[in-house]
Image (cartoon, rainbow, N blue to C red):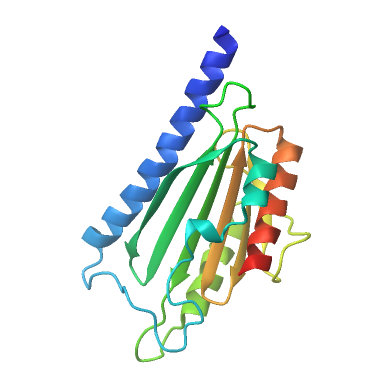
Length: 195
């Protein structure tokens, strides 16, 4: 194995490990830091009662974004006023495939039981916060608040959209910026169609 390939594999292994560690830290942090404890149940008005399973991401979309990728991580757990599932696919172990990583995170926001704040309002607030982080374009994704933006760390791109109280974040890495943008948008559109 060439030195450049080995470094690329190590870099992407660190990205996959980092994504799993960040997801785990977010779940643990949510459990420990919210004085009231996490809301682990959706309100009756919330359209999505829990985050979708990783199997809900169309296999063809995964294969198109990261050929020969396998599911490396499937983490889920409660967060304050929400629940999250993160799915990580990579082709790092396949010597015949280009090293690519696809991360799909589903976050179901829960409304207050008394109706003060809905899960949909919380999901809107998450997208508004992400949109404020930098320039974004959302062609091809559902919803007026959808966005696609360059990855904040490393190469890649992230597509984010909302379906009621559910936010979906799709990150593609291991590709040049424009290809990552197109891949993230395509996967997000297929996930949206499958919901």
